[in-house]
Length: 397
Image 1 (cartoon, rainbow, N blue to C red):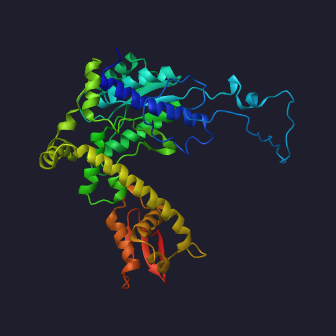
Image 2: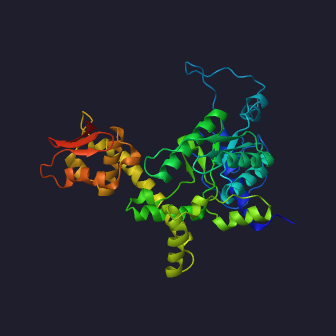
Image 3: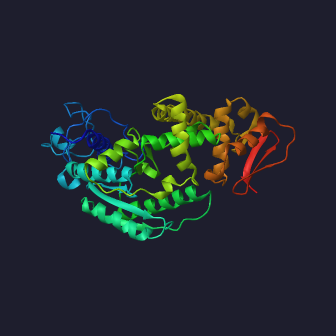
């Protein structure tokens, strides 16, 4: 008899991500091209086997290796194509390390359990990190309890990291910034290939609604990416799994779960949305709102990616020989493309991305589309945007 359906779904989601990590490790440029999310069950794979879906080496014509001068390098006459394609055992990349970020809640405990189950079967080392934000009494003791649970699952290395939460951007944003900084440091310290995060489909729906409430653009409505961070460090296997499935997976495995009281504190915006906003939407619009919002996130992400690529290509065409932005050429672009170029230029000039809002970019955009001799626009990071002689100059003031 197989595992409970909730446990099976959780393990499959983690297995897909681990297979992607193995594929990336064997590919020439793993950080530049993360493998897309898989669908359907995958057969077991042993360390050193070629990636699933990779072409089988055949009698195709081989290219002779080159010397530093570009001429063909000498080859041993007895070397066969198969021998040349198969790396020697000592040349195989070391087993990658994957960490799980675990708060002790149902989502991250289910993720940690699935990682502990799947990783050894694929020859992957698995560890864990729990972050103590210091925002509650005895939070250090609770973090150590979580670390002990992770060790009990067989994860190694495991550590509890304490952080100091600032005040910038509000308590939720400050805690998030401190947490990601700690996870980045832990990944660097242990040489981890990836860090798994337990965000679920419900979290994705909440993120889309928060972006909508702020009047944000399509990038904000695209929610959380399955792969994000420097070099694709952060992976979110559960974006297609609902919160209830994760909790059910913990229950049937008798995994202890800690429910953070902040998640039910109405003073936090996300908590109000979770316990009041989404239930009200479901009552008014019917079941399936979470799935619809998560689908909106993916569609928005596809559109945002396409527009970002368009803006990247168009930027070179709207700059003069000195590298300044030409207002007439910017005016001819679609607004969505033009504003992306303006935002990127402001960030390049020193404006913090997290403090640069849509209203800032709209003000700069009016220097192009509604020019009436306006004064310079002040942007975050002491960056100034002004129009001079048909050119848009964005620099630190």
